[in-house]
Each structure stands twice: as structure tokens, then as C-alpha cells.
Image (cartoon, helix red, strand yellow):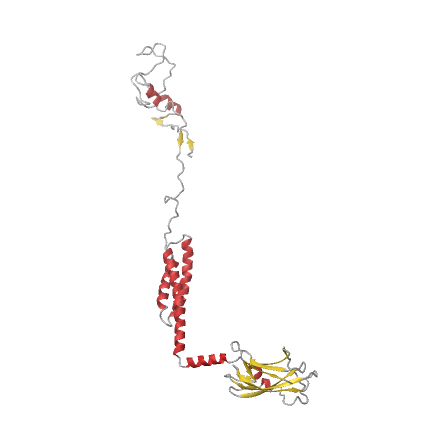
Amino acid sequence: MGYTTRCRKPVSLPRRAGNKTKTEEDIVSDSPQPFNGDQHIGNSGNNGPNEPYRDPSRTEQGTAGQGQGVGAGQPTAAGPSAPAYAGQDPFPTIANPAPASRRPASGGRRARPEHLSACGVTALVLGIVGTVLSFIPIVNNVAAILGIIGLVFGVIGLVGVFRGKKRGKGITIAGAVLSVLAIVITLGLQSSLSKAIDKADPTYHTTTSQQAKGKSHAKTQDTEGDLQSGHVKIVSVARSDNDYNNAPTVLVTYQWTNKTDRNQSFGVVMHAQAFQNGQELDTAVYNTYPQGPQGYDENSALAQVQPSAQGTATVGYVLVDDSPVTIEVGDMFSVTDKAKVTHVYNL
């Protein structure tokens, strides 16, 4: 809806005529004055003696039209006419047009961004380079890194494109896809090459067969067997003297060979346990003053042995009753190898 404004018709300012300044009243008095209908003029044409003067050259249409017929404000042969602004509204109403719609000229659609996504272009370049390098062995390590960086740039570029800040949606998506492809090709090719190199190694089949043979063997070995850290043999299990609490004990003697590449002790690399009725027995502490149990050496379990050398360790356990004792020996730090040496002894 438009709105209107009423404005006042400007008034002429005083002007200087010769050496005398005319005022607004002088200007109005000098201008042609409108004819007063109450004034009577003698017989002239069709006008009666008591009728107001009527200009025969002016028709009703011209008078009503304010400017049609004889020009408004122009004198006629019969007498002066009214000024051009006579009969007009001194405060004319000017209609202003309605404000233009704020809707864009494109029919309401968002304007297309001007700038191309720099992250999308970077992702595309890194994706292409990474995909090409991913087929080259060893060098494809760099391709995987380029693929990861390109994927990051691609994700950032897609965020900007979908928000409408940048353009180049196709380029950005292509860069992200190529970056992922470079990573996948690199990982797949490296895995295939690793298997091919292992199969080409002469010791591959021997090592594989030994591993399969070791797995096929029972994890539990009776009395003597090979462990990851060494070869262990349970030499003897016999009753011994009571401990310092006067509790009955059993003394176990182990013989082992160090299979590691450094000096080790039995108590560090081997985990020896004794069980009665399914419960683990506590390690016995003997009173070695002035003399300990026969065949017992309190320092034997911690004495270090060189690689491939053989050693003997004695360990005592506190008995609960006279039931059979189960001895188990395994690796202390092994995670994959669950092999152990075990045997059940009747006391």
C-alpha cells in the first residue's frame, strides 16, 4: 500500500526591483487578480445588465478542466483571466509509489557464490597425486599421508559448499573420494607386498611349519618341555622341613636352560606354581639359621644364567594337607605362548 505526503506550495521570496525591494503584498497586487463574479459590467454581448460578466471565449469544459480550452492564466480579449493556480488545492496530495519488493530479481533463489572453494581444489590436487603415488611401492607411504591431508581439506571444503559460502561442489567431492582411494590402495598394496615377500623368503615355510607344529602340540607338557624363555624340567618334588611358622612344606627342584639372548634368572623369566585341591600354595620361607632344609638354596631362584646355559632352582611351598600336589611352570611375560610344563605328584 502506498503512502501520501501533503506539501505546502512554496511562496515567492521578495525580489529587488530597481532601488526598491518589493514585498510579498506588492507582488500579489501586481499580479493579475481573479475576477469577482459579484462585480457587474454593463451589457456586453449576451450578459444582462444585472448578470456577472462571463467570458464567452471560455467554455464550461475549459473552466472545469482548469487549463483546457484557452490557456489558464492567459488574458483573453474580453478581460484578464484568473491565475493558473486559482481554484487549485494549495496543499496538493502527492502519491508516492509503494516501496519496491525486497525480493531478489532472480525469483527468490539465493545468489550463486562467486569464489571457488580453495579447500576443494587442494583436496582434488592432493587426491590425484596420492592416487598416482599409491601404486608405487615404498613411495606409497607418502601417498597415504597426502590422502589423509586431502581428506581433511575435502571435508572442510564440503562444509563451506553446503553452507553456500563457496562453489565447486563437484570438485570438492571428487577430491575427497580420490583421497580416500589413495589411502585404501596404499594399505591394500602394502599388505599384498608384505605377504609376497614373506612367501619368497626361504625360511618362511620352515618357520610356518614350526609354528604350526608348535600349535598342534598340547599346550601342557608333562614334567619337561620347551617354553618361550627356556627349557624346563621338574626334577623332584619331596616333603621338606617346616617353615618358620612350623607349617609343613614341599620342596620342588627345577632344572632350566636360558633360551633368551641375555642373562636371566629362573625367578624372573619363569612362573612356577604349586596347587593342592585346586588352590595355589604359598611360597615357603625357611629358617636357614644355622642351617636350612637339605637341598634348599634360597638364592638359586634369583641366580642369573647366561644365554644357552643351564641352571638349577629350588622353591618350597607350604602344604595344606596330604593331598596330591600339582606343579605348573610357564613363561612369566608371554602373551601369545600359553605352553606350560606340569605334573601331579603324590606325597
